[in-house]
Image (cartoon, rainbow, N blue to C red; front, side, top):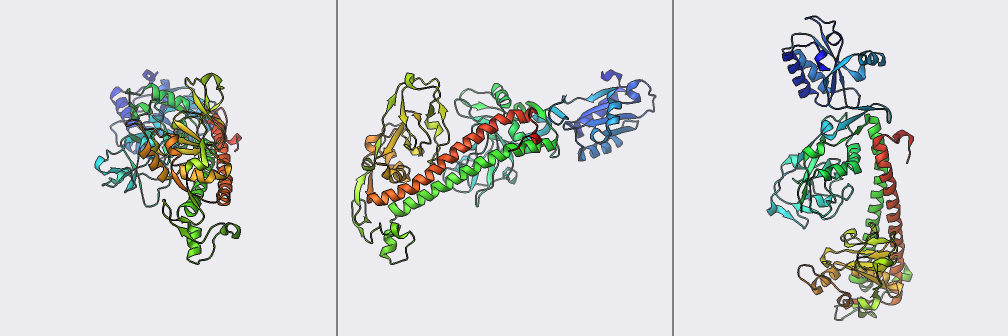
Length: 542
């Protein structure tokens, strides 16, 4: 088709080079006399430029015009922006044109119209991070936060746990800002759980910066007016994108992808307003999920603070001893004595006794065979349990389980006994079955629930189980030793009062978990339909 363009080869090559340099992601058509056979040596060359979104071009258009004026092409090259031409002129051009630069745009009637098929590489650049020196990388909070693939959630998104820290020199170009789009380039898991998935950088933690390391790619739009970063984030959460990344990955034990492989993925790009509308709908669901997560985090911190005050620091007792004003309701205040006495644990409130975890909780060892587990039964394994967080928001279903499991009931306490130093302890949000590497604990009676949960999830108890676990490469805790852990036992009324507070908050935590899972399912159902144009964003409301 390009043979119909009446332009000497040297000038055509120079023209194509200038187009690649200044408008690489823009489709360019020639039309007019140099296409329809009516030209002579002095005829102008008429070009029209079509952006991937069919929206007005920006500074790159101006730069191209300047470059053409300064080029060695001896004829006048007149350029036009498709988006700024009237519809009647569109129809005139479409009658007879030649594609001078083809970037693979395929228009579709989906959505608003004006959708285009593009590759990720048409729209963005992807840059590897910095190779930070291992001598300055720490697990404890020293310096800035060094983001790694471990901070990415399965399915995409930021996960605020398992941070690494860096206290060496940092080149400024590798300091991240809120809203930066990152993608994982390396994955160590068996199923490549997070390979290629995206995350948006959140607000900086207080006093620290987020750093961009070499295992992550930073995604930067070539033209901010052509693509919305949040929209691209959701494109990179789709199943089609995920399948292509995995299919092109390299490595066996450790899987790798690369910017070039990711940039080859093609998707449908709507006009910018539609992109923003899609990102707003999906983002509103994610924002509510994140709000629920933060609320659960706050409720857990409040429960932990009360546990620390009542059962570790003995705050009410010490306040009475020092003659200060009560800070609890009088009925609660009266439950605490005004003296501390010596014990094998050190000082404890007068009237309390020294006991063991086994006095307030028992192991629920209800084994179940695979044939007796229904396929829709909720299943919790160690990988579903977060570290240092009692809110268990992830679980699977029991299809295809090959070995026996333990049954648990809603509100049981689940304790990860394999490598107990990982600190995986949580409250079951529903009935189900779990891995045999999880100890199922039930309070006896329920009045002891708060006290049992407080101790079982404490750093001190984790240290104890780590010290008493057996095995070197794969240490395991066991209930027999766990049950012997020494604790201070208050009167039943104190335990019941704390349990009532914790029950109220754990009920809210569980409610938030179920709401967030519903919202996530709604988001996942909408995602492919919105980004493909099957559902029009302005016709759907959250």
